[in-house]
Image 1 (spheres, rainbow, N blue to C red):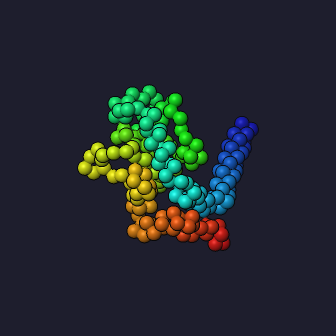
Image 2 (image 1 turned 135 degrees about the vertical axis):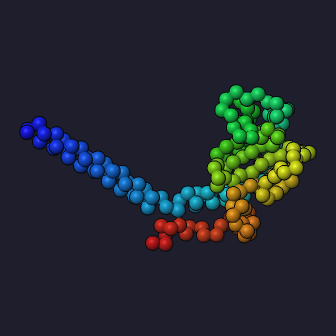
Image 3 (image 1 turned 90 degrees about the vertical axis):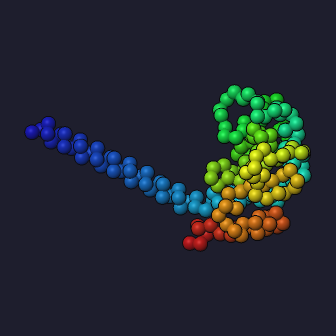
Length: 192
């Protein structure tokens, strides 16, 4: 009888401890959601402003083309030993990355197998950034897309927002001209 009573107490104690742990984790998750609500969107917009408003596009184009000049002459046949990336490879060691590109603190900097430089400011399905093409670049295929918006000849901006918002070009215009975006500083937290 005593053994059964002890086993029941241990089981009850284990259930209480597990329930407490789940409750604590749930509380922390909800606290973090409330604390950081709206920040990722604002952070993305700040990165867009950095790239589109505060960056000298001519200098960026020149820096990107310098990387391409120092990189492999035939990117399609370049043998990269390391993690395989979709559509490209990291800038090879020994190639100096100019300060203007380092200052952007890109999410990813790759040379595409087609021969252009890919600077990704934010990755994933909500990604955006620029593509820098060498002088005289020709589209490798019929369905090739340079990007969503040409900033300068050879410098193209791409952004997931163009796929889902017909007014997106107007928003990008505002960022380029004024360094502002619609809804700046209006996160869900500020509305409460």
